[in-house]
Image (cartoon, rainbow, N blue to C red):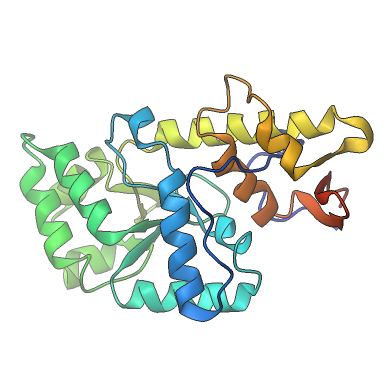
Length: 252
């Protein structure tokens, strides 16, 4: 069985755990657990690395490392999305690797990104009229023109602003302006962390040991961020032992 949640095949040959950056949320159930996990993972996002130009970005599967019931996670995220509290993005990853951001933070960072630019008015129009009424992660041309009242020129401005990215002819993904660097760092960091485990004896390492190691320079998002990535994406198996949780590279 091939690995799920892969971004680029070569980038998923190593894995990584988490260094504490504040207490992990206590084990809970239901919506409270998901919201707590979201807040915790957002706190791990290295905002200074991006000059605070990006909203905290969370991979949906990272939440699975904290809330084991995936059905509960997906249901709660859907509810939060419908309530307009979060937005989801297909930000350059495969279809299963969705990015989550809090709507208020996303909106604020987008406005900062386009501040002073000629296309700012069009972007604000999109944020004010489309975002509150539509929770979709993609938009087609017919809907943008007829339902939302945007011209071809305005759609081009939204693409130039990074709010929309081309999905295929006549449709676009909702996007996070300036997130290309995040995607680049994420892929390199995941590969480096998985490489740390790949080099270990039997391709396994205690979580507690991995958390105390110095990460390679390429792990710019931090070990805590990536440990939840590799566990949630099932790139490692979590094995309980008398010495603590053992992380072993998945072989499927």
